[in-house]
Length: 535
Image (cartoon, rainbow, N blue to C red; front, side):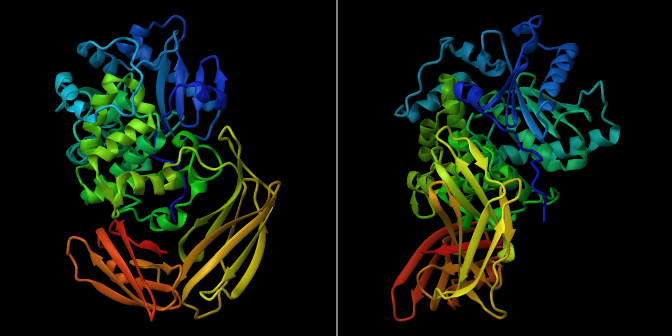
């Protein structure tokens, strides 16, 4: 199993009062999870950043590293510089806005704005097709000739595929790739410098690929993780899918959190402002869920990111507030895609709980479902400000029932210092079918519970459970007709269709209960295993 570390992920947020309220403030700047806002020293003017030489870059990189190391733990950072007026320095966007004659003070975003105007703005800005070129200037820690060859080969392979998936870059830039074994994270991206800093190539080329995708947006990064990181994650996996030589640990969305997307898609997983690092569980879980959610939209429409980005770049040039305004970003996404999984895009979006920016408050237990009945229970509290706190040394109980609701086993455990406890539900040998797992804990607001439904059997292909119905026939049909319809028996409320493991696309599942009603559900999956929950 892959360790849950964040290799090539950059976190972006808006510079707002809420950022400062939840971040530790230093004279040098603000660290908010995996983003650094670095205040310029008094002797470095704004113009020196916009036209930085090696001396300025080295000094500011050292300052960013010092600030990052005060709160170790980040594996990847994106660094933004802030001038003495409190403005983030984003020179490419500022230059484009100046060419278009926009006011220095951006207008207030209007969620109801006519997105069709984006094409006119886009054409006027003359920003497409743009092109990125790359250099490997690293005077302090020079790249070896073999490393340059590896990076150049990867660049030439990845770039055209990223462009196919993500569309033309927001700006035409020269992006430098710098090596720094002493960097505070395995990867950093500096929009003001148009520079990627890589600690080492030992962490895998998916890190470089991920940073390249961020470079496509550059100064037009979104302040909402679920849009910036979620879309970048989905694009990264898609690029790997299309390049056989790029071996990706999450090939075809095959990691456990992807496979069990439907079991993990619960309200508790939402996060204030779409912030993946709010603190109670592995940020990788949120990355994976957001990545697969956007991946579903991309599977339905392989132009989704290209069309979204072209409209997004135009809108954010006209109004930089768009980068952090969910309602406007949702307007753009819904204008690109009409429906996903058989329902209107906005309705589908509202049902993906990873996109919840106003998640419920209070005390919660949450089952982080894994393969072969593995379960991690997170116990946490979310307060009115959105701050999430793990609850250590707390008792958690669980009850396991079969498809008829008959108790199979019970158990309990105590959460670790990190607020979680793991267990494997116990079932009788030879049992196959649906089980129900209810976990509970005592809290100041009373007993809190979380329920999950699991399948005991062959977790290969499309497998899962029917919540209400124990016996019958399940038929799965591919929307594009690429495969013949497949029918399997549902036994004890569970099923498995191994032959669909490597089949990607849109599907309809119809369950005909013996002597009873019919249930139907549309779903989208990549070419990997997928847990299907029919209710």
